[in-house]
Length: 139
Image 1: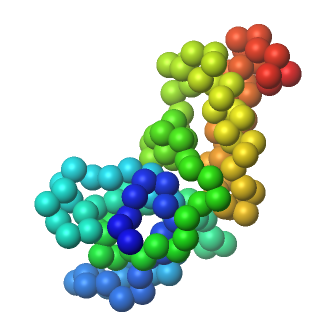
Image 2 (image 1 turned 120 degrees about the vertical axis):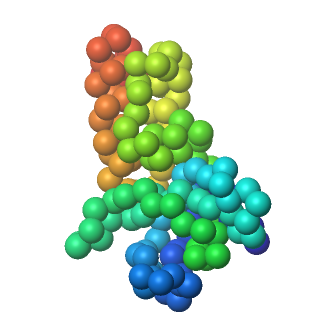
């Protein structure tokens, strides 16, 4: 199976790297691809790694050969969520009211066991922006 945006992946423990394995065994979600890997077998992918007790969430670039598919998410992540996760910030003012309300609804659907703190941060920011605009959805 080929890696795609929105997939859950696990970083392999065995990596062909001079400096040793990078984040071995950590899990995350593929949030973007990198154009430099278009000609490589497996490509290059940006992965939002899950936070642990010792390390915070972070987005890291991996070659596809260092990732293994951990399973499909229960739902499809939308492009706005993936863009936010990739940038670790969200430009809410660029979205109209309908897009903000649908983003807030999507965040309510995302499973809590995903363990990504970024989801609650987006939910809070989207709620604040909707309240600022007077939307009844966030009240």
